[in-house]
Picture 1 (cartoon, one colour):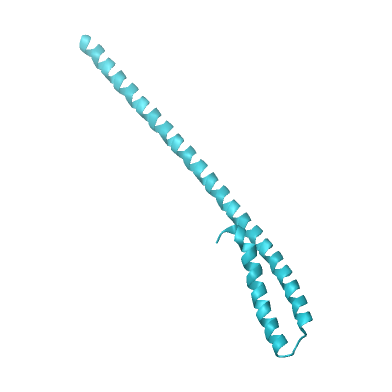
Picture 2: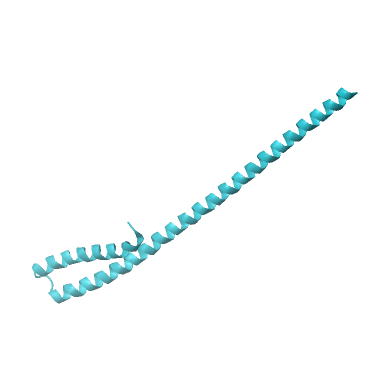
Length: 111
């Protein structure tokens, strides 16, 4: 579910549940309709606030996950660069040894 619809979803779901409960209580003459409407209003406000809190928490979790992934990617990139640098140094060292071996053999052959 998209983050921007969380507040609306929670508010409407809570309002629907409270509406059903209050409708039952009004039809069974347990409460007056004016009281039921006031309860419904406060319930909608309460669920709106709860939805905002839930959205903020989910946004924070998502933001932390994105930041952690970014850090992991940065570490992986640095690790790869270090490996490539080590490979280049190893290849350069191997080439230098081969050149020294060839030039030593050439000097020995000349004598």
